[in-house]
Length: 130
Image (cartoon, rainbow, N blue to C red; front, side):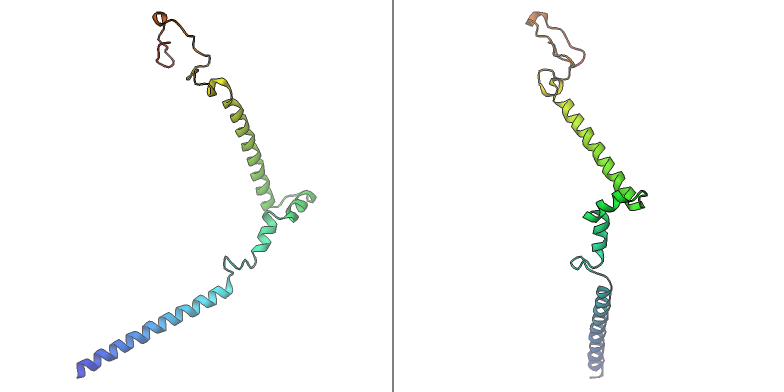
């Protein structure tokens, strides 16, 4: 009897400890959630949106002679995007040339001549007789 009573007390003690730690953790979580906004409740993040992309950003950027650190980084980013867009347009224009778009060129700068079957020459550039 004495042994079974000790087991019951031990199990009861473990249940109380388990329930207590669960309640303690939920109380900390509720306090932490009240202190910081969640992803659904944007809280103070509206100010960041105004800094990085709102309509007020465009007006403030033109009116100031000196740029803040954030404005300077945004301007550098926009400049890089414009430079990349220009480079992509130039590459697309280059790829429209027949050297790249016509399969008859197959790696040559000039289209290879069509010779008679007995007069074909070995091409060092592509390794084909034509």
